[in-house]
Length: 468
Ligand code: 2HG
Ligand code: ZN
Image 1 (spheres, rainbow, N blue to C red):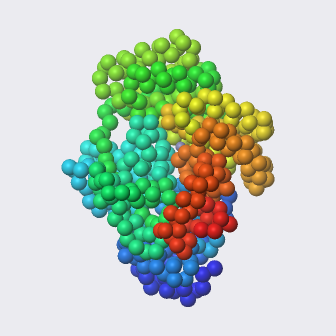
Image 2 (cartoon, protein in one colour):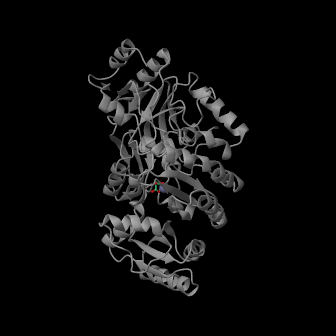
Image 3 (cartoon, helix red, strand yellow):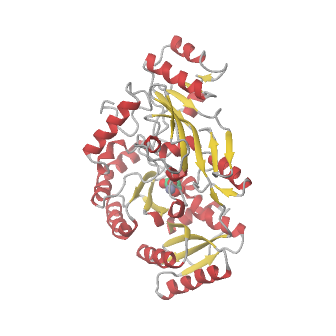
């Protein structure tokens, strides 16, 4: 624990009242959406300027205090958890949009800008910020950059990385770096901006980000299709991709749908029960596009890949269909799920899922397993629900045992143990299933350059015993 006199020094660096040490704040700011770590930070500090962030980092170096960055804390891998007396640096006070350039289509954001705030700002300009997540209402741009957030539109727009034009970062030594200066073309050696994207705050903190915007999509239209089995989903994807430019292609299982319908506030897509469902979206710019979608649907029915389906005819229907998928994570959080966020290249998905499913059914016969994800980009979310009366720690211990087999399959398919949620604390012991020892050594060497004293979000990405 940091000495009280050292915390007094921290208080002098920021505005009055901007260091909190009360138990409720420590509890709230010490955790993200993962539920299995006991939050235990020493203090929470709220800087309001780049200079204050630099002063905090320099102070932390002098006193050897570990810092944990905190955004919307919607992460699912423990990347923003402070469980070991760290000081949490919360960016809630740095939440303004600073500038907009209509010609460059760029917006300068402070790290605490909420994703939905940026999306709404873009719409006001007649433009679009395309990274969209179920947690858009509370996740912050700094956190999105820290985890290279993906979400539901990756098939068309890619990850957060694609939309970062430039970054200002404070390194682990308190230096301010201006990375890429918003250029489209810049062939001047290593692109350090990209290193900070997905670094989970382990190299330094993002203090300003210039985000790119796109043209607004026209007449977004969704279809939900019921399939007889998992194997039919990929030919459906292939058929639609051959005819339309998809903006999303998601899937979920009957178990997931049942949980959503049990909420009572989302209408069923259609009457038939199907084991799996695909949700696809496209811009119905002309009558012909909508007709093409319907013709492809009929083709899929004829092939036996689709049993039933519906197409949105209004924005309300579009939103209702999306709720079937977007509400899943929050709805099943009631069952304290054990989560995996894995990916392979799209062509490998069917064989990969079959192998994983065999392991899961063999080892978790008594648990309810809910599959969903961004199947159009190869990202599957495997959620194992805790039986109502089972002890949380016993449940997580039994799930952890099976990780090894799941990740061996991921490795065999050259997949990722974390497609979009980050490594944080939950996946750090498994990093070797996706990254070679040589790669991990390079990653640690890079960390040592930016954060020689190992104070920036330690214990995230790499296990703490692997001295940073
Ligand atoms: C989603 O796609 C989020 O809904 C959360 O990435 C995934 O809850 C999950 O496992
Ligand atoms: Zn997801």
